Length: 360
Image 1 (tube, rainbow, N blue to C red):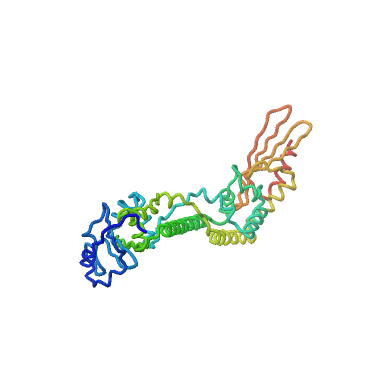
Image 2: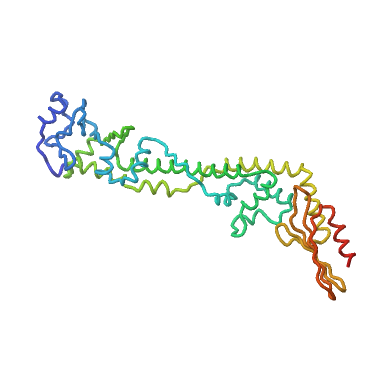
């Protein structure tokens, strides 16, 4: 039963639709259309609507023909900063924002990597005899993956790899933002109970079932109120909703392909290049001669005699040239300290350390 009863104006409806009497069986008896503040009788048209038509109706639905800006501001209360994002998803269009991912994000790709790529990294760490472990980079404040990959950068330039990885993350973020935007819109559309179509000229068509319209009119509502109430489901900060999303799901496959291919190249170069073979042999020599690693690229050894102390420092190790700098300090108890610096080839280390000791 309807709470409020209106006297039906069938002559108006017949004039609008220009149809015969039997075409109005769908109109509830003793009811007229209540337009509200945003519509009037002149906005109504029949199946063959003219250019000024805003409201069409038949036995199944009421159809509203509006401009998008008119609807978003007067019915949906959507802010102008949010209109673009709502409009794009209404039309089923993608938003391409070319999102730039900060290079710092590369330091957190550990959780993307497969067991196979982690194994490659550990193999390289061992191969290059780096004083570190892959696990140290997971949640470390002092170590980051950029520093580790900089070690490999000396073997094979890796800037392209870093940029490609960031590109995969960016693509995933943009893709997921679109998915989440579309999902949110679909949920709101379903909740509103409306059928909506928007074309690229901003012409908006909204359909509401006739039964729903007449039920709400029977409770005292009008067309303006009914459309406004249904449109309020779309009142959301669509701009913030889109940009606040930072979902990288789906980036793993591309990241692992890019990183894996790069690591394969670095391993192949390292294992087959004489420079790296000689470099590893030099590091083994330092260990055999009881040098201790005191930094990323520094080694130290001290000899104590009855009348002096000799300190050897190895720095500036060059894989490419097969050279290093030997810094020697001779501290005699009864004389001045002497300090020597020599740039030497890898295989000259034993001879020079022996000579300094013999000189004493």
